Length: 86
Image 1 (cartoon, helix red, strand yellow):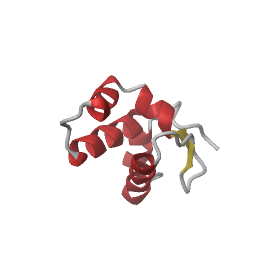
Image 2 (tube, rainbow, N blue to C red; image 1 turned 90 degrees about the vertical axis):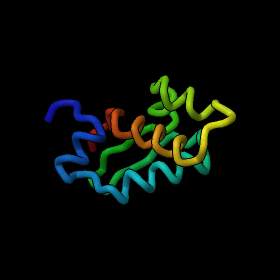
Image 3 (cartoon, rainbow, N blue to C red; image 1 turned 120 degrees about the vertical axis):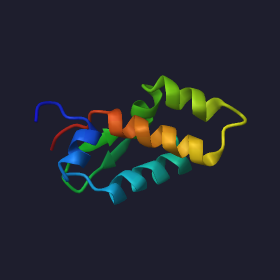
């Protein structure tokens, strides 16, 4: 798999649902988190992944957005991002 997204790694069962949920939790607590390491050794800059998503950025800055919408947007941004292989 050349240059896979987190979603590709998830589908291939290299990254677990729990790991993605943990990454979302960490980002939601501290939006400036740079490095997240999956058990596979892949690393992802969470802040950059979310910043690269126009949808996530817009949702997070929308004052009326509910927590569930924010978490969903962050999760999607993480799944679409391309982590660095070990």
